[in-house]
Image (cartoon, rainbow, N blue to C red; front, side):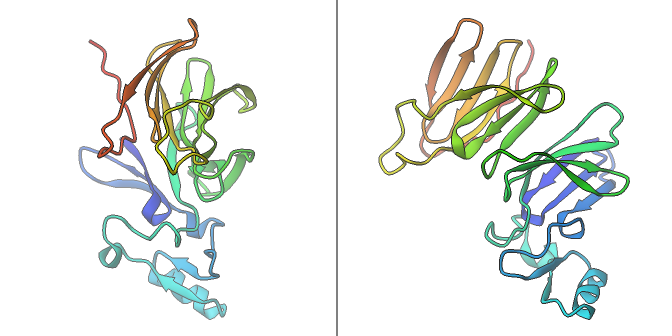
Amino acid sequence: MALLASSGYDSLIEVELATGKINWHWFAWENGFNPDEDGMWLAATNEAKKKYQSEGKNTILIHPNEYGEQGLLISRRSAHPNCAVYENNTGDFILCSIGAHGNIYRISKKTGEAEILIDWLSTMPHGLKKHFSHWYVTNTTKGEFWKLDQEYKPLECYSFSSLEGKPIGYESTEWLQQVVPISKDKYMAIDSNRAIYCIDLNKKQYSEYNINQNYCVQDILVFNG
């Protein structure tokens, strides 16, 4: 089973990898994230399009056959979900980062209802995950990595914004793609404007690895052995 966040189509998808069967499909447009910034109502089905039109709303049908694998332009997306994880082992609720607003939501798989859990992040947060007994989230456009308690309350913040190494023209821009745990006290941080960092919080040390400027690194996977 895989849980996917489709930023281009403002949706979350739970799919069986062995068969390709979609078990659950959540569209942000049908669950409170409509219209877009231009007042256009986005519809995933003909039925939804007709419903919006009957209510006098300007609407447009968004079909993957017409928009391709990238989906909508970022400026058109009303939600831009960029991270989704199960809240616990039951799989009844999913935590999702809505990049357009910067909020973290708890989404019910049964009803589709989205409840705001965290509303103090900047736009485009990434990398929400549980590591041991705490939750972590990357506040991408602020260059911050936050440690949260089990109730999603902030405990500690690690900021990258004072580090050197950004290219000319990006002095005021932060883009910390995400921070990935690799052990209890060690993390790999992908700073798109600087480098990849290996951080040891216990020793309060870090190592820096330069990124080929032609690369766009978005994730790091840890292999044991």
